[in-house]
Image (cartoon, rainbow, N blue to C red; front, side):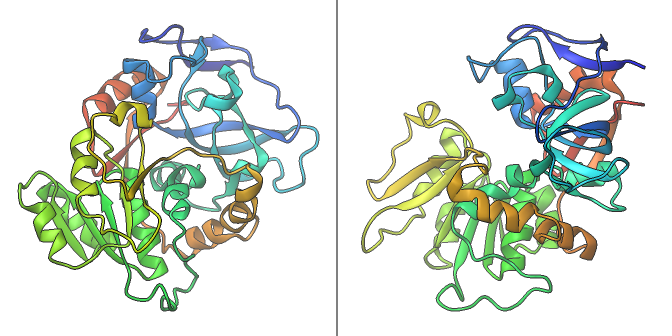
Length: 347
């Protein structure tokens, strides 16, 4: 029995599929027989733009994965057993080893970064982002939003009536953030191209605007002050428009969550009362552990949300097997909205 993986051997190099060894899980890790991996914008940015100069090669990309538990490593805490269907968040940027990438048939994941997905189809799980929920939901949670409940309950004071702007709602993160914020009870404002308006409204967005329209900032402003801000596009143009909507607080600064390192946004004129916060997943940090347990623990929010079917996201489009990985990355690099591109390593 052997493994097969889609490797990238150098910065901006081609994706090459070849046989490799089946990795061994270390302490607190689990070996997964991968059934579906979502190709993310970050994969495309690494592969085609060398976004992270310190990234280690050869590498296997793929950060959102779902599959079947094949083996438990030493020191696991009994969260899973062999044969369980799970969603996993990879640590390719921390582990710096090909065994952590999801674009292969067997991969290694941290037990505590994984959740039970039950009978949820594997492509659906990765499209929902449930296979790495902190990666998708850490951003809205990091804005200190009220936590949603299942079943949903009215938003309590002092949060009642507050608004969140999610710029770029048709991305996978944007879609899930809309669903999460709406479950929590917030008034959700979002943007997309007009062809995705119905998608955003179906996710629960209360107000939807054309991201490219010249009067969008003005029209959003007519809705009154916005309280929370998440820019899933995070290009200088989008950030520049979002910060125009931030009201001056009585004290301190208002956070605007972005998905690019701040060094890449230096040309954006940001008011002194706005703090751009680079989305950086650090759920294992001591200050985030309680939240991560609430979100990802056994019987936690995500497991219950999946079981109840209340968490919504974009649909999956399965492109094929590992041989399609390079094509999928190129497609993501050119821009995809309203769907999640998925690779099935055994296809």
